[in-house]
Image (cartoon, rainbow, N blue to C red; front, side, top):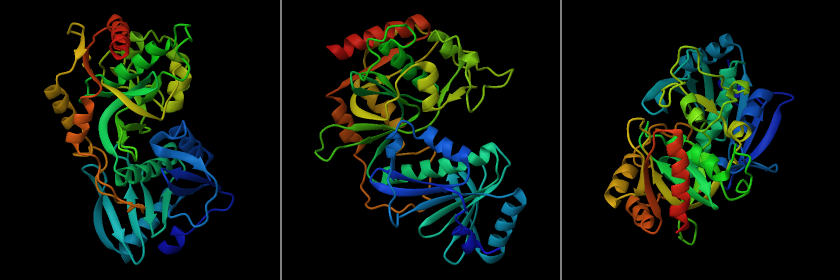
Length: 394
């Protein structure tokens, strides 16, 4: 098998689209309507992770090609690479290493999700990333994963400060919901987005442009050219939520939902308020089923440090500066990223800028509302919405 020839293969009848990743064009080629649809669904609404559609561009700096092959064809590619190249390893995600093969003008990477034995591959050349994968549901996801990785590298190179945070929008401003894993970021953010907008209540007075949900788990913060404040951009990771959280928000019609990722299997603990097994909803599904507007980016206006605890009483108030600094330092992915390690794709970027210092960010927060809360019930969430609205109104 000729690895170089396969890397430049563009399948007949393919769907070709052009994306703008911040200010960098990216060409995407696939024959799979399913993979193409997943890209559209993931980077919705336009602007999510700085990705939007654009018109055709001649000689874009990077093209991503999505090829489908049989499992035997993929194994043949990997054997050919192993026979003709230098073997090494790379970090697909943090602390998860897989084989790579460095040849003359190309590198072949083994692709395998940490939760699956299904194998795919990616061929990297100077201007092309070619995904070679089986025609399966999992295989369809590799195109989106690669584009998301590319967009993340471009954002980091552009100076984004990355935080372990969910976020919602109220009165046109983004509120970061920051905390350790299990603190209740996802539940707090989506519940406040619904309650503050009146979603599900029949009250549409606040459901226009002022309130919405941004995203789950990762937020990118950038300083505008004039250095005044920060702008928050959401990363398109699924909202992971359990039935207990849906119950607390008064959502009862979930069994009628047609969810791409499916529901947790019988016997899981997803029906608990703090269960580990979660239902995963794309941003489109969040808008469709939870009735909230999804906002890809907004200026930073406030920070909320949550704690969801069934045994704790309700509390709400300003967060102490020392507590704020401690929580944010523990959850700053610019310091220690739990997902993205080495830039194995070697994404071409126009410039590299260091992110704002954490001290500068914390200093900026002294000008904003920084709040903390503890909730443990549906009544607590409703009370939190009222208290938050009053606090940011002052």
